[in-house]
Each structure stands twice: as structure tokens, then as C-alpha cells.
Picture 1 (tube, rainbow, N blue to C red):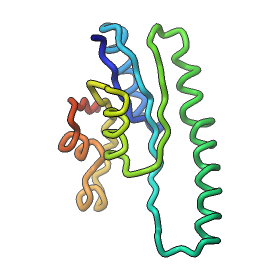
Picture 2 (picture 1 turned 90 degrees about the vertical axis):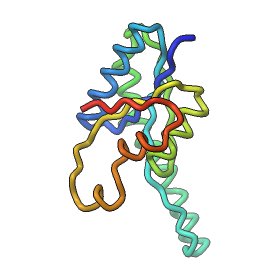
Picture 3 (picture 1 turned 60 degrees about the horizontal axis):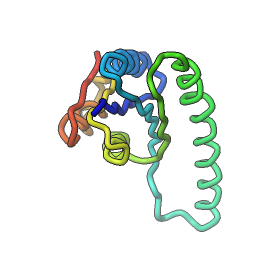
Length: 144
């Protein structure tokens, strides 16, 4: 069975290196790729109904922008690569959502870039790459 690889992609240099790595691996093994972009979203339950409605409208706008400016250019770039490309665009915790996308796609690997964030937030909350490495049910490749 050919590999299906989920690539966490946000347009950063690390994500581009991760995508290049995944494309080469998929080509070599006759596999396919799911380019996944996750927008962080928290469900603020204390908002009024009007505020929630406005927030949902903004959510739709953010999804459209992400599709247009992040995923579509990558799909266009990879046309003719010889690799089957799918996309996934979701809201949620990045690591948890990438894992859910991998399960849904029946992927057997997740590839992500190392962002190199070394600030306080990373030390307190952990990086996406670190969270994936600890929680994923499939192998995770972290591309430097």
C-alpha cells in the first residue's frame, strides 16, 4: 500500500522544506500527500449571540483567505509533480487537528517543519512538532 503523508503547511520556510521532503518521499514510494493547514481557533463560550455570529462570519473569511493564499498556490505549484495532492483546511489546536486529519485520511505519516521557536510560549506550551512527536499514532518526521 502506497504511503499517504500529511504535511502540516503554513507557508513558512520550515513548512516549505517539509513539503519538499514529503513530495520527494511520495515520488519515490508512489505515495500521495495531504497538504494540511490549521487555523488556531478557540470557542470563547462567553460571547454574546451577536458576537458569536460576527465571529463565525470572520471565520468564513479566514477560511477563504487561507484557501486562496496558502493552499491554492501550493496545489498549483505541485501540479505536474507526479504526486497526488489533496488538501485539508480546518480550525483547531494545530497538533491535535493534524492528528485528526491523518486519522481521517488514513495517512501513515505526518511531516512538519521545525519552526525553531525558542521563546517562552514554546517552553510553556510546547511546540507543534514536539506535541506531534509525543501524541501522534503514526510516525512523525520533523524537517529542520
